[in-house]
Length: 80
Image 1: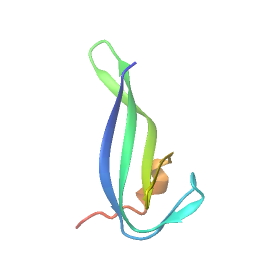
Image 2: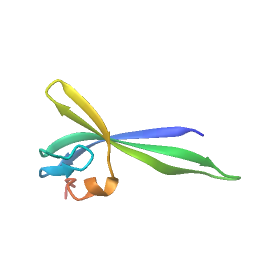
Image 3: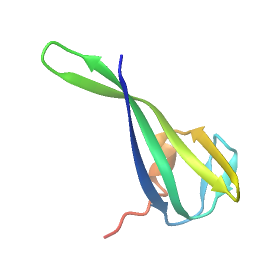
Image 4: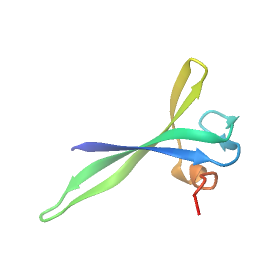
């Protein structure tokens, strides 16, 4: 089955906790990638989310961790 990845830059308006790292990260922009798997049907192709990945950059260190999308939803800054 095919997997597609959608990447976006999201801005967190306040520090937020990431359970996967057991750390609180500072507010600011972060790259979030959503991986979805295609489910082929007779007439339509549907996609189901299989992973949400957060890229954390600290100096020269870059980490990508799998996160629960609900954990990110509360801290995301949405412009008015």
